[in-house]
Length: 195
Image 1 (cartoon, rainbow, N blue to C red):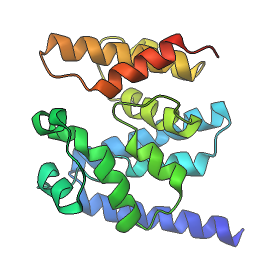
Image 2 (cartoon, rainbow, N blue to C red; image 1 turned 135 degrees about the vertical axis):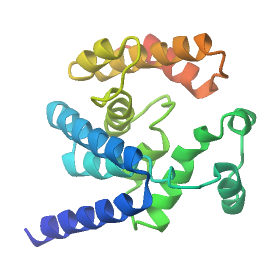
Image 3 (cartoon, helix red, strand yellow; image 1 turned 60 degrees about the vertical axis):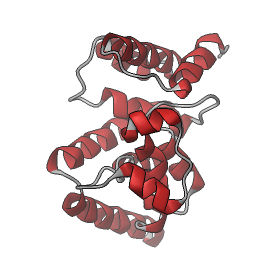
């Protein structure tokens, strides 16, 4: 019981720090993602505490006034050409580092879920899938196809990922924005994966 109380206290501290650190709308988004991730974790029998912590920290690199490219350079992270055009694609990798260094997260599964939450990845763990889908389906998300992705996420994580990645691709094409190779790989992997 003491261990669980310590985890809850740590999560409370994390939320308190994030509330000061993140813009109000980003913090509120993180809270909604956390609630969605916990619901999905319960349904899919994944550790709810890991889902909660990964979800609440998934956007920890989106704090006020951060220059993502400068921060990545400072940390020695290689920057892909698409990230130079779309710097916000750096925030998942930066977020995993910040979660580890500033928030003391040592759990590699949580850090990996933070790292993969935006564009996904092939061979994601159930926790990674849940944080990815929670970020894309939290109640304030409103894009073409989100209702279908939400429904699928409670039934079949892989099918929901395909639908989510497909919607993202259509949106990026329509807005004439560059597409991350990882988004394509994620969609193709889960589209052709059995079970």
